[in-house]
Amino acid sequence: MLTRTKRVTLGIAQRIDRRLAAGEYNEVATDEELIEGLSLLLYRRIATLIFLPADAGQQSGVDVDPADLAAAHQRDQAA
Image (cartoon, rainbow, N blue to C red):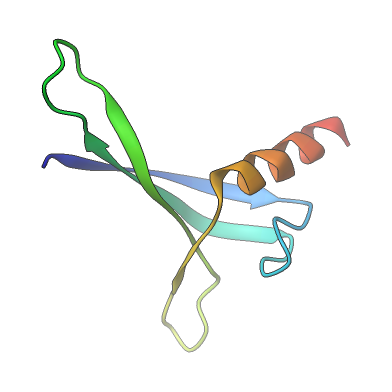
């Protein structure tokens, strides 16, 4: 199965969910896999990770719901 990862830097002024406070996040990575058997290229999201600020020099990725991430971004745009 062919997969790809999209990476973006993100700053969120509002809390994302009850685990993730507002702040500057170094990276959000979205993993997608190719849906095979179609006549066009189509990918399905299989995971979205947000990388928390490094503690003791080590970053850790946490699963995040893309809908929560989008809602936090929309709240930022409205403010």
